[in-house]
Image (tube, one colour):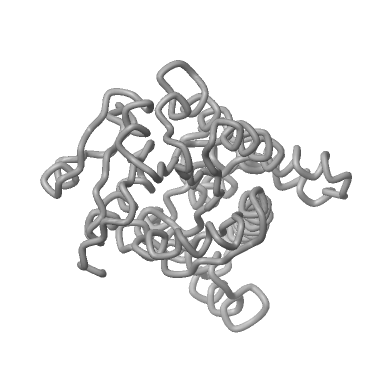
Length: 297
């Protein structure tokens, strides 16, 4: 990781959770200053504090200490709350400051948020993330960025401090649009593979043979490799994405496709699978075990 000291941006951050902690750590490693919102949802922050990060009691205070504010929260309602509620980011945002929304948000909400941030004298960039907390800690996230070209270029060194692949998707909102498309495909593949694995096991097929056939044939790819540790040994730690988050993202995809007036027949079946899981806290790979035991006599 780049250890050179950077002073061109003072960074604020709201959301030091599973993904945000790694982002914060790598921003500090790159030499940026960092202020963050002290919140019960944060991961342990002792390492961040020892590296010089400054905790703040409100989102307004975070914004007052920064000219770039990163948001790494659950979705659109949380983004709007942390920006616009009393003592929110907008109350402390300096003229010309940049808000970078790394959350998975609804594009139509992003458009409204961008207009309000612009009216307040700031700029909004959506920089949706893919990959997992493991890559976040390693500084190897993928980012899908919606921003004016000038803003994208200005922010690139900061984004590169915690991301390995940075795709400029277009103007504001396009990052969140492409993220929902990505997550629909990824979660759709996961659902298909979970159902296929459960059926394979009920048929008495050896897991090794099942994996070999898919890997060498049309079922190989990133999603299968993320599910492989669970299929082989019940280890879900490499794919720590909850069914609740999957359900939320597919709901956003549903809304987006409604607004775009485009078909989503397959997406309806995928969403129904995730919505029908009683324990929404389970990780996506654990769908395999759930489906394997359903309808047993």
